Length: 197
Ligand code: GDP
Image 1 (cartoon, rainbow, N blue to C red):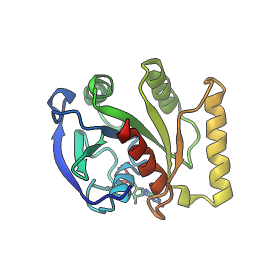
Image 2 (cartoon, rainbow, N blue to C red):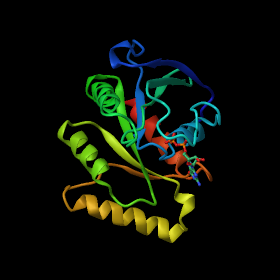
Image 3 (cartoon, rainbow, N blue to C red):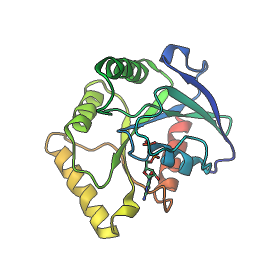
Image 4 (cartoon, protein in one colour):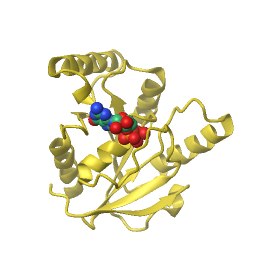
Protein backbone atom coordinates (compact mmCIF):
# COMPACT_ATOMS: atom_id res chain seq x y z
CA UNK A 1 0.00 0.00 0.00
CA UNK A 2 1.23 3.49 -0.81
CA UNK A 3 0.79 6.14 1.87
CA UNK A 4 -0.13 9.44 0.23
CA UNK A 5 -1.06 11.38 3.32
CA UNK A 6 -0.94 11.05 7.08
CA UNK A 7 -1.96 13.75 9.49
CA UNK A 8 -2.59 14.09 13.20
CA UNK A 9 -6.31 14.40 13.93
CA UNK A 10 -7.03 14.35 17.66
CA UNK A 11 -5.86 13.27 21.11
CA UNK A 12 -8.30 11.89 23.68
CA UNK A 13 -8.22 10.61 27.22
CA UNK A 14 -11.18 8.27 26.71
CA UNK A 15 -12.24 6.07 23.82
CA UNK A 16 -15.80 7.39 23.94
CA UNK A 17 -14.60 10.75 22.59
CA UNK A 18 -12.52 9.26 19.78
CA UNK A 19 -13.54 10.04 16.16
CA UNK A 20 -17.04 8.98 15.11
CA UNK A 21 -17.67 6.88 12.03
CA UNK A 22 -16.62 3.37 11.17
CA UNK A 23 -13.17 3.86 9.64
CA UNK A 24 -10.82 0.97 10.30
CA UNK A 25 -8.23 1.74 12.91
CA UNK A 26 -4.95 0.10 13.83
CA UNK A 27 -3.59 0.72 17.28
CA UNK A 28 0.07 0.53 18.31
CA UNK A 29 1.17 -0.16 21.85
CA UNK A 30 4.33 -1.19 23.65
CA UNK A 31 6.50 -0.46 26.60
CA UNK A 32 8.01 3.01 26.71
CA UNK A 33 11.02 3.43 24.43
CA UNK A 34 10.18 0.32 22.37
CA UNK A 35 10.35 2.39 19.18
CA UNK A 36 6.62 3.01 18.66
CA UNK A 37 6.84 6.61 17.49
CA UNK A 38 9.71 5.74 15.16
CA UNK A 39 7.69 2.86 13.69
CA UNK A 40 4.62 5.04 13.09
CA UNK A 41 6.82 7.63 11.41
CA UNK A 42 8.52 4.94 9.31
CA UNK A 43 5.19 3.45 8.20
CA UNK A 44 3.76 6.81 7.19
CA UNK A 45 6.98 8.16 5.69
CA UNK A 46 6.67 11.22 7.92
CA UNK A 47 9.56 11.59 10.32
CA UNK A 48 7.68 14.14 12.43
CA UNK A 49 4.21 12.59 12.72
CA UNK A 50 4.48 10.81 16.06
CA UNK A 51 6.84 12.43 18.50
CA UNK A 52 9.99 10.43 19.05
CA UNK A 53 11.68 11.15 22.28
CA UNK A 54 14.36 9.79 24.51
CA UNK A 55 12.16 10.64 27.52
CA UNK A 56 10.22 7.44 28.16
CA UNK A 57 6.46 7.57 28.56
CA UNK A 58 5.82 11.04 27.19
CA UNK A 59 2.57 10.44 25.37
CA UNK A 60 -0.27 9.77 27.79
CA UNK A 61 -3.23 10.06 25.44
CA UNK A 62 -4.96 8.14 22.64
CA UNK A 63 -3.67 9.80 19.46
CA UNK A 64 -5.48 9.41 16.12
CA UNK A 65 -3.67 9.90 12.81
CA UNK A 66 -5.73 9.81 9.60
CA UNK A 67 -3.95 7.96 6.79
CA UNK A 68 -4.80 8.40 3.11
CA UNK A 69 -8.01 10.08 4.30
CA UNK A 70 -9.38 6.58 4.89
CA UNK A 71 -8.15 4.81 8.01
CA UNK A 72 -6.52 5.58 11.32
CA UNK A 73 -3.26 4.77 13.01
CA UNK A 74 -3.81 5.05 16.75
CA UNK A 75 -0.85 5.71 18.99
CA UNK A 76 -1.59 4.40 22.48
CA UNK A 77 0.49 5.35 25.51
CA UNK A 78 3.47 3.20 26.44
CA UNK A 79 2.81 0.90 29.36
CA UNK A 80 4.95 -0.21 32.24
CA UNK A 81 6.86 2.98 32.86
CA UNK A 82 7.99 2.19 36.38
CA UNK A 83 8.59 5.74 37.52
CA UNK A 84 4.94 6.79 37.20
CA UNK A 85 2.89 6.99 40.38
CA UNK A 86 0.32 4.31 41.16
CA UNK A 87 -2.66 6.59 40.49
CA UNK A 88 -1.39 7.65 37.08
CA UNK A 89 -0.58 4.06 36.17
CA UNK A 90 -4.10 2.99 37.08
CA UNK A 91 -5.64 5.85 35.09
CA UNK A 92 -3.56 4.90 32.06
CA UNK A 93 -4.49 1.26 32.38
CA UNK A 94 -8.20 2.12 32.55
CA UNK A 95 -7.86 4.31 29.46
CA UNK A 96 -5.91 1.73 27.46
CA UNK A 97 -8.10 -1.23 28.41
CA UNK A 98 -11.23 0.85 27.83
CA UNK A 99 -10.04 1.67 24.34
CA UNK A 100 -8.98 -1.88 23.48
CA UNK A 101 -12.18 -3.51 24.69
CA UNK A 102 -14.62 -0.73 23.85
CA UNK A 103 -13.48 0.59 20.51
CA UNK A 104 -15.42 -1.26 17.82
CA UNK A 105 -13.40 0.36 15.05
CA UNK A 106 -10.12 -1.13 16.26
CA UNK A 107 -9.40 -3.69 13.55
CA UNK A 108 -6.06 -4.82 14.93
CA UNK A 109 -3.71 -4.06 17.77
CA UNK A 110 0.01 -4.15 17.05
CA UNK A 111 1.98 -4.94 20.18
CA UNK A 112 5.60 -3.83 19.89
CA UNK A 113 8.45 -5.75 21.46
CA UNK A 114 12.10 -4.72 21.41
CA UNK A 115 13.77 -7.60 19.57
CA UNK A 116 16.77 -7.50 21.90
CA UNK A 117 14.72 -8.24 24.99
CA UNK A 118 13.79 -11.51 26.61
CA UNK A 119 10.08 -12.20 27.17
CA UNK A 120 9.03 -10.09 30.16
CA UNK A 121 6.26 -10.86 32.60
CA UNK A 122 4.43 -7.61 31.90
CA UNK A 123 4.31 -8.37 28.15
CA UNK A 124 3.28 -12.00 28.57
CA UNK A 125 0.51 -10.99 30.96
CA UNK A 126 -0.67 -8.40 28.47
CA UNK A 127 -0.69 -10.94 25.59
CA UNK A 128 -2.63 -13.38 27.74
CA UNK A 129 -5.16 -10.69 28.63
CA UNK A 130 -5.61 -9.92 24.91
CA UNK A 131 -6.09 -13.61 24.16
CA UNK A 132 -8.61 -14.07 26.97
CA UNK A 133 -10.61 -11.11 25.67
CA UNK A 134 -10.51 -12.19 22.03
CA UNK A 135 -8.69 -9.04 20.92
CA UNK A 136 -7.19 -9.30 17.40
CA UNK A 137 -3.49 -8.56 17.70
CA UNK A 138 -0.12 -9.05 16.05
CA UNK A 139 3.39 -8.91 17.50
CA UNK A 140 5.83 -6.43 15.99
CA UNK A 141 9.48 -6.91 16.89
CA UNK A 142 11.34 -3.60 16.68
CA UNK A 143 14.96 -2.44 16.24
CA UNK A 144 16.06 -5.55 14.31
CA UNK A 145 18.95 -3.50 12.90
CA UNK A 146 20.54 -3.59 16.34
CA UNK A 147 21.10 -7.34 15.96
CA UNK A 148 22.80 -9.15 13.09
CA UNK A 149 20.45 -10.87 10.62
CA UNK A 150 20.95 -14.36 12.04
CA UNK A 151 21.09 -13.21 15.64
CA UNK A 152 17.86 -11.25 15.13
CA UNK A 153 16.01 -14.21 13.65
CA UNK A 154 17.27 -16.50 16.40
CA UNK A 155 16.25 -14.10 19.12
CA UNK A 156 12.74 -13.69 17.69
CA UNK A 157 12.41 -17.46 17.26
CA UNK A 158 13.41 -17.99 20.86
CA UNK A 159 10.85 -15.42 22.01
CA UNK A 160 8.13 -17.09 19.93
CA UNK A 161 9.07 -20.55 21.22
CA UNK A 162 8.61 -19.27 24.74
CA UNK A 163 5.10 -18.08 23.86
CA UNK A 164 4.31 -21.42 22.26
CA UNK A 165 5.01 -23.14 25.56
CA UNK A 166 1.61 -21.89 26.72
CA UNK A 167 -0.17 -21.04 23.45
CA UNK A 168 -1.41 -23.31 20.69
CA UNK A 169 -0.54 -20.89 17.92
CA UNK A 170 1.12 -17.55 17.40
CA UNK A 171 -0.59 -14.39 16.20
CA UNK A 172 0.96 -12.78 13.08
CA UNK A 173 4.56 -11.75 13.77
CA UNK A 174 6.46 -8.91 12.04
CA UNK A 175 10.18 -8.16 12.13
CA UNK A 176 10.87 -4.46 11.75
CA UNK A 177 13.46 -1.73 11.92
CA UNK A 178 12.63 1.94 11.66
CA UNK A 179 16.29 2.51 10.94
CA UNK A 180 16.44 0.48 7.70
CA UNK A 181 12.72 0.22 6.87
CA UNK A 182 12.53 -3.53 7.37
CA UNK A 183 8.98 -4.85 7.73
CA UNK A 184 7.30 -1.71 6.40
CA UNK A 185 5.86 -3.35 3.29
CA UNK A 186 4.69 -6.42 5.22
CA UNK A 187 2.89 -4.32 7.83
CA UNK A 188 1.24 -2.06 5.27
CA UNK A 189 0.18 -5.06 3.17
CA UNK A 190 -1.33 -6.65 6.25
CA UNK A 191 -3.27 -3.46 7.02
CA UNK A 192 -4.39 -3.24 3.39
CA UNK A 193 -5.81 -6.77 3.55
CA UNK A 194 -7.66 -6.04 6.79
CA UNK A 195 -9.01 -2.77 5.33
CA UNK A 196 -10.78 -4.82 2.66
CA UNK A 197 -12.69 -6.95 5.17
P1 GDP B 1 8.70 5.16 21.85
O1 GDP B 1 8.93 5.71 23.22
O2 GDP B 1 8.23 3.74 21.89
O3 GDP B 1 7.81 6.01 20.97
O4 GDP B 1 10.13 5.05 21.16
P2 GDP B 1 10.85 6.02 20.11
O5 GDP B 1 10.33 5.81 18.74
O6 GDP B 1 10.83 7.43 20.66
O7 GDP B 1 12.32 5.39 20.14
C1 GDP B 1 13.07 5.28 21.34
C2 GDP B 1 14.55 5.32 21.00
O8 GDP B 1 14.87 4.16 20.20
C3 GDP B 1 14.94 6.53 20.15
O9 GDP B 1 16.23 6.91 20.55
C4 GDP B 1 14.96 5.99 18.73
O10 GDP B 1 15.85 6.67 17.89
C5 GDP B 1 15.41 4.54 18.94
N1 GDP B 1 14.82 3.65 17.91
C6 GDP B 1 13.52 3.49 17.62
N2 GDP B 1 13.35 2.58 16.63
C7 GDP B 1 14.58 2.15 16.28
C8 GDP B 1 15.08 1.20 15.31
O11 GDP B 1 14.33 0.53 14.57
N3 GDP B 1 16.43 1.01 15.26
C9 GDP B 1 17.28 1.70 16.07
N4 GDP B 1 18.59 1.44 15.94
N5 GDP B 1 16.87 2.60 16.98
C10 GDP B 1 15.53 2.83 17.10
